[in-house]
Amino acid sequence: MTTEANPHPKQNGSSSKAPNFALSSRMATGRAMSLDVWSIFNAANLPSDCINLGQGYMNFPPPQWVKDAADEALSTVSGNHYSHPKGRIRLREAIRDHYSQYFNRTLDVETEILVSSGANEGQYSAWVAWLEPGDEVILFEPYFDQYLPSITFNHGVPVYVPIHPPAEVTKDSTSDDWRIDFDELRRAITPKTKMIVVNTPHNPIGKVFKEEELQKIADLAIEYNLMVMSDEVYDCLVFDNRPHVRIANLPGMWERTITVGSAGKSFACTGWRVGWLIGPQSLIGPTLAAQTRIVFCTNSPLQEAAASGLEQANKRGYFEKQIQEYTERRDVLVKYFDEIGLKYSLPFGSYFVLVDISQVQIPDDYPFPETIRGRGRDFHAGWFLAQELKVSSIPVSEFYCDEHMKIGERFLRFAFCKDLDTLHKAGERLRGITRFFAKP
Image (tube, rainbow, N blue to C red):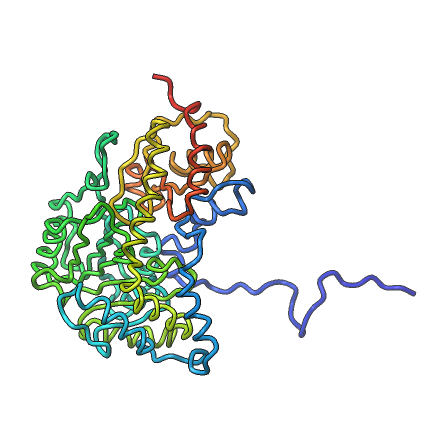
């Protein structure tokens, strides 16, 4: 006699029906459970031969001498064990030696520097340390999307102030033409406001904030006794001899500013997840306490490698060479845009270009997937171009609140943190976009 196997056997006496647990209320905030742009414009969902100019990761490795330092650290005993929650002393000293000149002070490795598991985790720890339920955090739109859930998970309330694009993008438009309405910023401040988040050089605009712009933000921060989170992870990618101004250096701002840095952006190793925070002891100390309970410490061998990178960068002329290489990458890509007739704002920092796709006409009957339906026009344009031209980008409306989403729908973000061959191939494919331009 034979018996059929039960297709749904009970294990350990449990029922085959999954239990229903109540989800934390924080998961309903910050678009945390929404299908995000990275999931939609994922390589698995796009044509296999699509060139990825959407996501901001490099398709080239870190410098060999930085990789060698990682290998060397892995061969040691201490490099494979816990680090101090503040960060390995070698890396903190390297950050001090590299950054002190840029902050016009000798940074204290014990109290003013905190190594984090990527810049994002460092920011998260700061929000854990400083946000009370109902505290408002001002975000300039478009904003890096990870800010949003990191704030709301810690019971903060995001308040959105758009950086306004030019009314019309022309052949002479630059990231300088994206401007904050400072009256609008003042109106956004309430008795509940705790912090302003500044991102310079800016992702995705490529804007490098001028001193007068930062001074106006600083004046409001001082007037209303606000903290500033200054996300400067692209500080080593500033072009055309533009000065990178640090808001922490403005009068009265060191005491209220946490500055964020990143080895990933500095040394083309975004997957290493090594970042750092710089600020006064009064802000770094509680953030350290929070981070110790979140991750305890950051991985040890890659801290050693990041330290080696900072130690050797100046003598190798590394950052100067990197700026030259990224400038060439940017110029290669925008030259194609010029030849094609695509309008964009020339970025002075980071590694993104925003392209105005207003003139691109999308067929009404195009078979978009359900994940795109109901999204902004830029989602439709980005998907359409990825399918038809095999070049992917990122729709910018993802980085706006619902109320302001229309501002971003005009633009797609293209990343140029790719090798020149890839950028040339993408540029040649994008020439095909002209057949989709609206007829005059």
